[in-house]
Length: 61
Length: 224
Image (cartoon, rainbow over the protein chains, first blue to last red):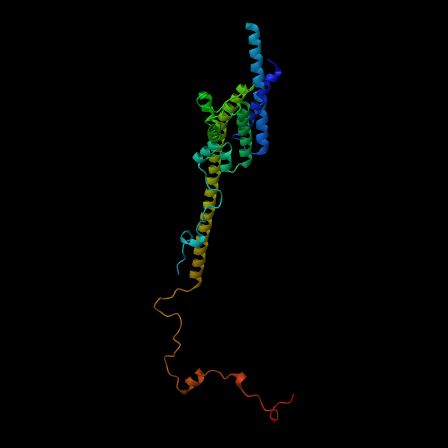
């Protein structure tokens, strides 16, 4: 698997961050801050899960 | 004379609702299901509606494009179609327009496109819930404003009634109480006869403007 094959992740993460960040918020600044926070949390979650899967695969391979 | 209470006076009645009317949660949900962002537009949030439309619609269109517009197919992809169904309008339109299409070549990002379209449908659930929440917030604010408005008008009516009562009490105190059967004014015709002087007294005073001016050669005219 190459890094190029992971290019499908950012668009869907951005879309999820936009929708989840916009929902339930009012005001431009609050929405932008919420979208940013959601995107950061999503990215961290994906990276952590990816690393864990990678390590587990290495151990049990 | 009785003063009409302010609550019964049509000129002082509470006018009809001037602000935004309450919205229906079900209409917002139906509109949001029909098209992403339409529920937010119904509540009066155009910026949010545009954001939802771009995010969800863009992801759905990207999914369609990556699959050659063949991923919305309830026969081939039953489980994914359940996710697509949350995007009512676009899914129905896509299914109607692309049901006869067949893949002619292998799409390298086909699986990613299927994922995008399914995620877009699931994200629309969040958008619909957000539209319903916006309606609830809108109605809460609308009800609070209406209650404040009615309370303000009721206070105005109370103050009007109190002022009218105070003015009436003041007038009653100033005007002496008289018997209702006794006439307020004296009879203009005298009850007794004063003899020949009566008619002279009753005659109106001669009008000076109608008197003839003195002649210029009048010897008795005072010299200026």
